[in-house]
Image (cartoon, rainbow, N blue to C red; front, top):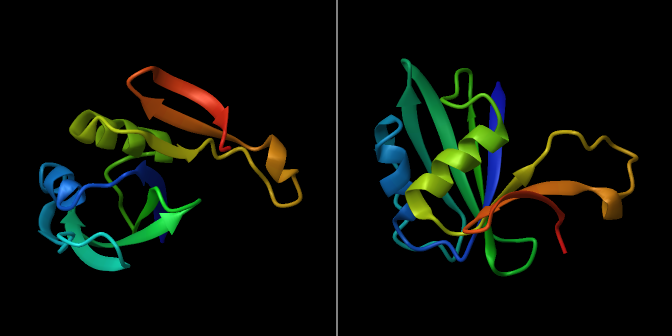
Amino acid sequence: MQDLEIYIRDLEPTAISGWLESQLDDVQLDDSDVTSVVKGSAWFNGTRLRITLYPGAFGKRFTSVLMEGDDLPWNSDLDCARSAWRAMEGEIRCSTGDWKEGDPVEDEKWWRLDHRGEQLVVWN
């Protein structure tokens, strides 16, 4: 099982399903209310994916979008974030994948994609 996780600032209702419907097959995700956890599924290359939205990640303004499956449409969180940003054009963040257990959290860098481009930032 693999997973991809991105964080979307000020997520609008139906934005995730609108984006994923152009990327995946048979998207089953009711994201008309994004104020509580939303679970759904979709298909990619004949493999079922689980999709979960967790609002309130890293404060109230970000929603975590987690996709899990044996075959995913993107090779990295950053590739996934780029696809989401092209569809939504809001602020999207994701891990660089470099952080390891025991590393100081305050030194952890994240990718931030927004109208200014792609930048490595400390979350706060």
